[in-house]
Structure formats: C-alpha cells, structure tokens
Length: 142
Image 1 (cartoon, rainbow, N blue to C red):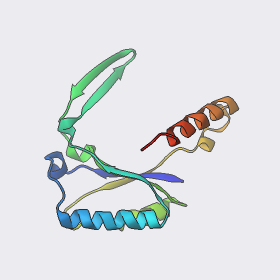
Image 2: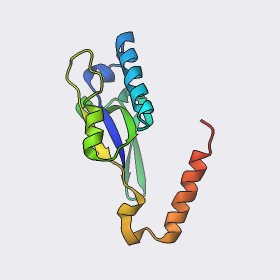
Image 3: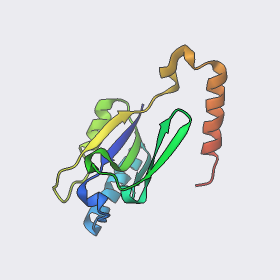
Image 4: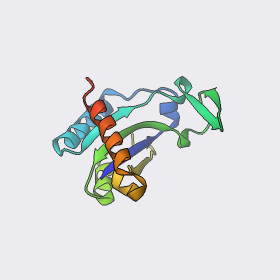
C-alpha cells in the first residue's frame, strides 16, 4: 500500500521561514531511516502559497487565482510518499517525524488508490494503458 503523508502548512511555512540547520539535520536522518527501511518513494517541501496558484473548474471554463491563500491550516507545506504494509505502519512512521521546535503541526495520512481498487471498471485495456504510462515515467531521467 502507498500512503501520502501530507504536511500541513503553518504561519511560518506560509511566511517562507526556512528550517534551521538542526531541523534540516533531523529531517535528513529521518529520511535516511525511511530509505534504509525501503519505504520512502518520494518526499519534498513546498514553497508558500504566495508563490503558487489555484485553478478553478466550472464546466469547460477555467479561472486562475494567484496565491497567497487565506487559511494556512488548509494548505500543504510538504509531503512524503511511502510504501507501508498498513495504515498502522504508516502512522508509526509519522509518529517519528522530527518536531524540534515543539510547535503545533499536523500531518494528514492518506492511502493512494491501487488499480485493484477500481474493480471491473478499470478494463484490461485501461490497465495496460496505465501500466505503459507508469513505465514511461519510471524510465525518465531524474
């Protein structure tokens, strides 16, 4: 099972406050643990919403709204994508995330869909097309 660990934004992350050396070191060690355990698939931090945009859809119409966005608690500051045997295992990894400043934070844990979750609606042709796309993405240089 794949899980996305969604790091919720805070007033500091939205203000563009960068982590100090101590936190960067601790996060590096945590990421190294994830790699050694064979569970880390990806992980990145995100720039503040002031450097982003939202695209709203209404039928065929599209409307772009530039950041920043009002509610920091509803925004994402970063993520990890991990492979775990269960939600419980994913939660155990989240409990180990460094929080050196001791402030309040939040990480949302969400399971990614697996092709099997779509049942018969995902026809053999659609499965083959999806597999082909994944192979193409995997073959791209980093």
